Image (tube, rainbow, N blue to C red):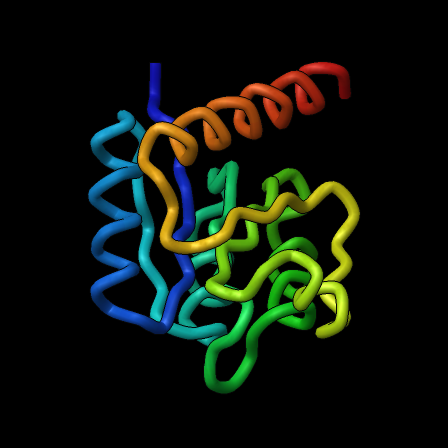
Length: 130
């Protein structure tokens, strides 16, 4: 079975590398983007992407607008917002993508593994119903 592909979008290199390490350790395939423009290009090149881990605050294209752009290219991909800001702050920033989930950074590995597994399983179930 082919491992699920996860796009990690974070402008902080150490955080991006840490998330990549976790994702690959959990048995998934990781694609990395340092900014919104890179993420959009990678999304177009990899339609198999099942989940997007998205930092909320980055220079340039980020947050709500980037999530909307990525879901238009990858309509079946789940979104997991990862931010150092607490969830209520995201609401104040206008972050509202139906079905998206939130996880506060730094992420605990076991919690991240559980969340990714649940989101990927739910996404697969939705795709199989179509």
